[in-house]
Length: 201
Image 1 (spheres, rainbow, N blue to C red):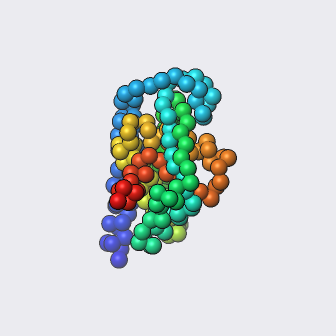
Image 2 (image 1 turned 60 degrees about the horizontal axis):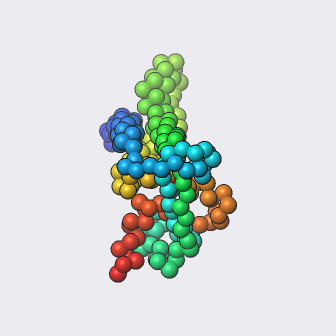
Image 3 (image 1 turned 90 degrees about the vertical axis):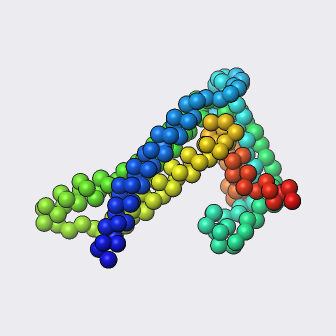
């Protein structure tokens, strides 16, 4: 049991944080390639006239989380279930800012576990106290979530029509969710690719 838990610690406290940081670096590096074409318009997010492009998204009734969809064995999204789609101009500055904030969150989520395990726990044990198992489990879950988030963002950015397409779509969704119904499910252009084949049958 101790050996098994040690393997989990090795993966979640060392390999996963390193993977998350590497994926974050690759995401930033890829998005720095810039856009093939850029025009100057007023950004929906900041209201400034800057270079950028359209952020696009679709929305439908709440379809639940990916886990809930897997439990059902199928997606509820059909062409008829889409309630609408929108596009809004998002500047390069706001798209990059969104990505950097997302990446910062991911890194901050995966760092506490190795910090706790290799710095705080030895200090606690050296003072005669015992480590808290529940805190470690909580941080372990955070490490898993942060790494999964870093992978999903990297994959979505790489699959986008342009390096910043996914970021623009997510920023546009953030802006419009303030006025559209909160109960909707929102889909970026990258997410929609998973549902295009059923539409075209």
